[in-house]
Image 1: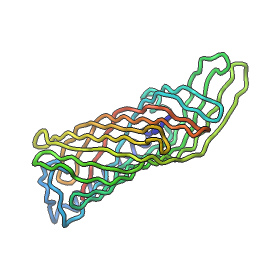
Image 2: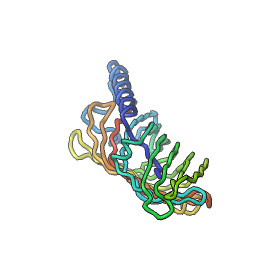
Image 3: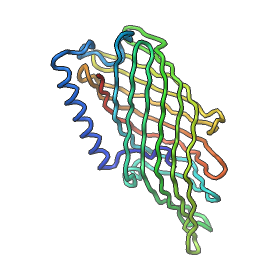
Length: 274
């Protein structure tokens, strides 16, 4: 149920805004004495890689999702149908961010998602009246990227890495005749991934960005995938705002724990470069 029920209820949204303000202030102060090589009107990432200089990127972001599919713990299997409103109502805690270092055509990065959530939903069956689900989850995606295409207004990277899932979950079935049955799992797994990402300038300050990958290949999951597409606006040589839509799917089954869900929803983030 929520490979990433990871999203911004009210307190996480406040934390994200505060973090964004700190990063923006620090970037502006750091750039007052020595302006960056990128012009203020140029979206970050469109310039050619520099073989002699390391560059870094930090991108806190928020993701509000809907989730559809099935989850199973022990002998219990429950359908999942969570709207974006349900996500906001039931998310207890979430943090998300991308951290990246690059030099020349190469880049090393890590996408981090942590979420703590709970949800109740109807079963509508003769034996089970409803389910309660609680989870704590880390989703870590380390990757290595290589700049395969570079033009004046567009670039594309190819990348490979892993999607690491660490999940603690509890599922309770509330029986129609009364009483309940509960089971839990504390599990983790790793899936290899490959993908492409790119960015192109649409105007002086506006750019289009995409990122997609696929993996699993039976190593742990039968299939994992994600796709993102969005627009960004360059506010300064140091930072940009990016908003778009992200989808992520997983089909995993280790015999005791099963997760077959698609998670999707709008994303908004702040790119800070230094």
